[in-house]
Length: 353
Image (tube, rainbow, N blue to C red; front, top):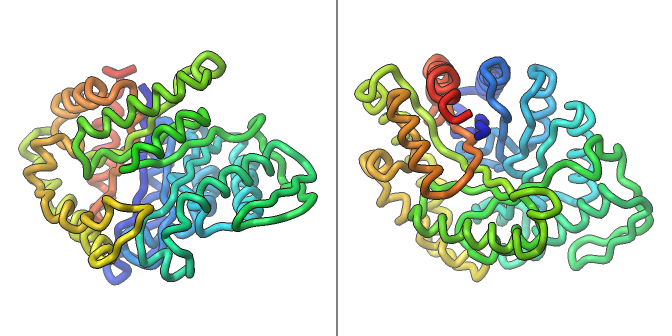
């Protein structure tokens, strides 16, 4: 079983500056490398304290590459809807080269209305732009003198540089949350999967992962390159005792939820055929309490034995997964994030390897 760390910046600028945030998370990435974690991942979001400190995952991961030796560097994920494929293809292979071939390229559709509004892009174009963007980037990585005629992007006789360090190109991951079609589409194309079990019911996500794995097998990818991987984002808080973990984690988890709810308000009164379930996002978040997070294993919180038991439940529920842990959510002090990472690496990780 592999394990990574995951950054979703949720810092308020009046409480944590960008300079301080990145100094701390670069230190945490270096520590994760020393402790034996497998990867570091960061999102692409804009404009608010819910993710907005990370408008460019490639820039951050390039800095990580110079502070680490082993960690895979995961874009979790870049958003083709807001990026021209010519720019994105070159940025990602530049990161692949700088890191010595350690890039895992994750792509997602985006889901926050205010981001679409600011970029002047219709949410109804989301899936088409996403699929066209991945198709264009993949061709730019694997062909020379590419001529591309899409609905949104057209170019002629272009060779993207630098060429990928990994051959034929970095591993591709696709993030999906709600729509079953996204899971099937990802499996059909033989991509790896990124999921977040935080909001929905676990049995529903397990069913969607079965759709992904079946589509992956049915299209022959398993026989050619092995099983598709499923990377799962989970909040992690580990302390020496169960009581300490549960009491200390509460303010950070509740702060994270407040921040998420504030961004989800942008869905109030909005409807999109591309995002039918998201109009209820604010209410879904209002229904999640810290007690539900604990009772329903919506995060990994406890002493090392608790954490091992919760991870066993995750594996039994979802099959083989690759957990990546949010370790510094809710503007948590760096010392507590380091403690979680260390306790997990020394007392839990060996049980699963």
